[in-house]
Amino acid sequence: MQVSPSILASDLTRLDKVFGSMDMSLVDYIHIDVMDGHFVPPITFGESYTQMVKNLLGEFHPQPGLDVHLMVESPDKEVPKYFSIKPSILTFHAETTHFPLRLASEIRKQGIRAGISLNPATPLESVENILDSLDLVLLMSVEPGYYGQPFISSVWDKLEKLADWKKKYPHLTIEVDGGVDDKNIEKLSRLGADIVVAGSYIFKAQDINERIRTLKKYS
Image (spheres, rainbow, N blue to C red):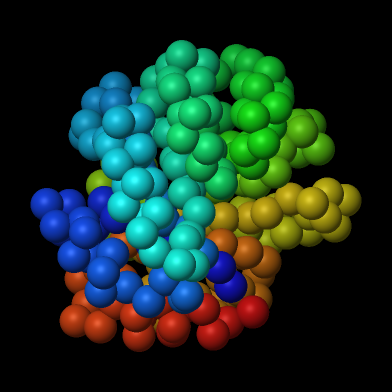
């Protein structure tokens, strides 16, 4: 299991200290939740903050990749702003664009893995015909916008179905974001999740690294 800790749940005023307390050999990605105040109510980070995070991570070896999740109303305008930062993964929402194939192609041309995210109420069938043009599908297991929400159980069926589809698209990575903890990680792994995003479970704990180890022991 790969783990992508969401820094939205960390102490953003002392991110250098937060990163310094993390065993980066355990961390696969750092999850950046970009929110514009339109697609979701909060406003969080933009490309400048994301670049700052990448600069901070440059001091660590090994250096985890950036997992940038765009929860924005106009990804067609916002996606190119992240090309120069070169995140490992750049994900946009299926609900926000009429041109997912074009957007995914532009991301891939930059050598970045292209992901598409689905809100809990968005059916998998909305992306079924474009899976061969994507690298990753991110299933939201909470409503996007706020950390600390409980896992939405209807996502289990979605995950199981997507994992079955993956037999036809073995290149595809499945990521799950929201309400991930020690109570559901075994089932997430068993049903086919490759990457989990965790915020509160990791950063609200006294021992961050032990929480990451708990998530990573499943495969």
